[in-house]
Image 1: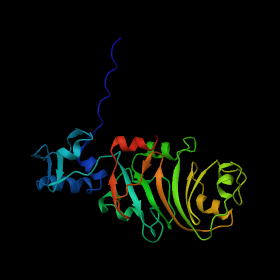
Image 2: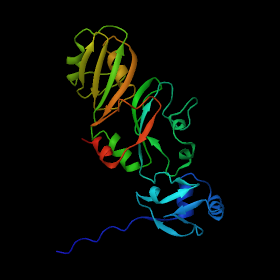
Image 3: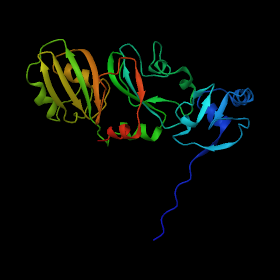
Image 4: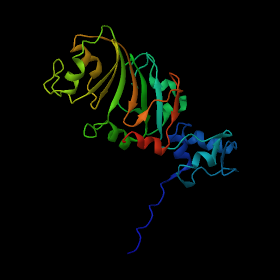
Length: 249
């Protein structure tokens, strides 16, 4: 049996590609090339209407102003979200996108958060310009687990773990019980809670249903991907394909 033909790589005009990555308008890109500011494989580019394959190694081969090209579309960013920033493109106040390079806020397709952490929740947050991947991760059918470290205002009573695991907990103003969740007690006022849903303020509302209040909330894990201990609040790094796949493990 003949082998199926290999898929042809996606190609793009250089000016359109760089414009979609936030480097400026197509006219800006043409002016940059005219000023010898763009290179490919060590050679100065003059014809920005030329089509080139858009491959993962392009940032290692192309440079703008003697700096490696930004990652091409399909990137996934792991951010240690600090307190006080919002997962929004338009809300008032500090936004998570302001923690990324300014040019990245001009990219098309746009970079978006994979789900949300509220303003007063910190920890592991993914951002991506890959819409298909984003929807695969947040799809309720996937039931990807998320682990949070919660610091509570009052000591745990000892009944919470059984209630959360029962699959019968009904949040205020909702008619569908929560899926079973796992609680690991760390101290009288600290616990790890693992959930497989992403309802509005779910962790805070779960503890509120038990008569408690969450003072601090920090996400440690998404699927099989853990927040690196050496990644400081407000810092980020790109994930390689192997690390991206850990989310689904």
